[in-house]
Length: 224
Image 1 (cartoon, rainbow, N blue to C red):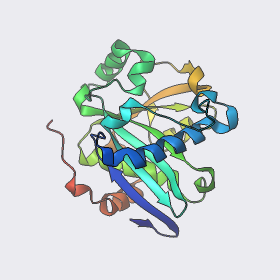
Image 2 (image 1 turned 30 degrees about the vertical axis):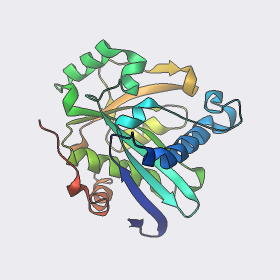
Image 3 (image 1 turned 120 degrees about the vertical axis):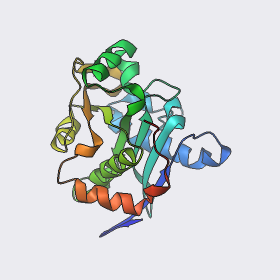
């Protein structure tokens, strides 16, 4: 799928990500995420002693990955992982299982009805006017709707304005979970949620475009 006015090709990889054929794109994804998260030294953990960048995360094998490619290679990514997957999501790792359970219970949603969106990253050249970040978000919403999730959760940093951007498209703070300073990301993270059926009106046309362009009818659905 190509964006109007932007030479972007979209690729969607469903879980499980475990076969040898996935190694090339996973390695490229890890390098790009590590490079962007490193942020010119602000987050040193994402640069290896060899000088290479990496963001290797075992949770990747349980996730749907939406990747955006330009002629130069990978320029954007986002992932969606079920809270009922075989590994703890990022939010659960940071706050603990019981606090996450309490937050979900306050919203009357079970784990198998919810998913975590994250690793929402865009190369600097494609930020701003290209709308690539919004198209990635719209794609994740489209996937979540197709899979019939009732809730998306996630975390976003306050330093670069991600929280404000997510709130503008409909996210709200997760009840009972306070912001948390996370040294790995050199940032304070806010925990957020949204019903994927209730995105902002501004995002709705992009969601509809991504549904069509990603051929999401071929995805399965949750049994809930």
